[in-house]
Image 1 (cartoon, rainbow, N blue to C red):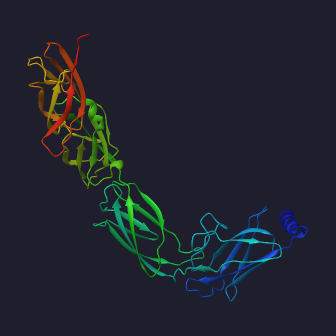
Image 2: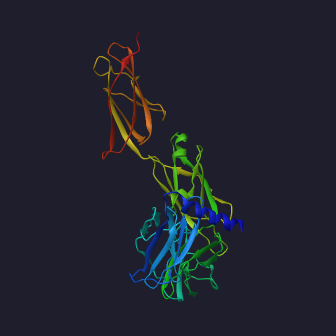
Image 3: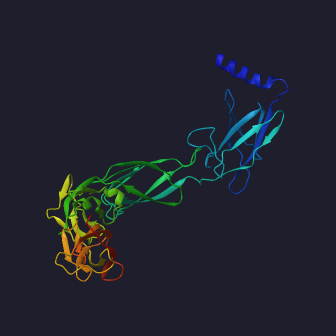
Length: 401
């Protein structure tokens, strides 16, 4: 009784405010063919303080009216059995029109607010719905076989091609199409429990992704003949037909790697092609590695990456602007590789230098006055359509002080 009295007093406060009169909200409800819709349920909620709700039904002309409404803002919801409701899942009165906009009204003192016509989509009569499910692996996109599928009160087992078809009875209600519980259990995959909606008297097709249980493939990669162990942590490891992010590859500076792949089962041995890429080195593919049921499969042999190489040539001049004096001590060194080449008549060359790797060149030579001169340059050899990479001219400087 106290709650009811409070409600009446609250309404009275609005109606009794000096110079302010209550107003009216009215509108029309149609179906999706623009025919009048009689018997639609309409709910409106006052957005002031305190909030309250009022209900109405559309008459034989599809019209609803809310009289004696206090001044302020309102949101409005619509529903009818067998039609798509305009009330969101958060509950009334949060509602959307057919364009995704909230249906609202604002009552001014003594005025009538007319809401634009609202259209409710017909959901179809009750009947049998054919539901076709395609089950796929969320990692590889392959169809998933040997699943137990329960949809509503029906079930099926052991599809050999990943497709399941069943027929269910569907009766739309005031909230629209009912949710049908879907349960899928498959060896090697996480169980799935979802809800779907099926339209009666139609074929309803769904693709359902199942998440596989995971195992690992691990191994070690080396650089064949080149001392760049720090580069190994830059290696990219991928698996054919699996998104690179899902592989979750990890490579440390020692070349040890670990990747995640779908696990095998007793009945389904799963194999994968592993690709290893490092800029400046030839890609390697290790084919048909079988994933374990649990734990990790270790690739026993060490995987060696072979660098992509090119001839590197260059020219040096002394500080006087001429070629150095002929001497056995005239040498060009590549520090990181620990190799050297003779400088003859101001020219040097290296036959096989890895590409795409930053390197440092040091020059030591004699000038015509028998003074030692040095020079340095940094370079990264690239394959530019020719069979050689040219280092721009280097000028050495005397070490004599």
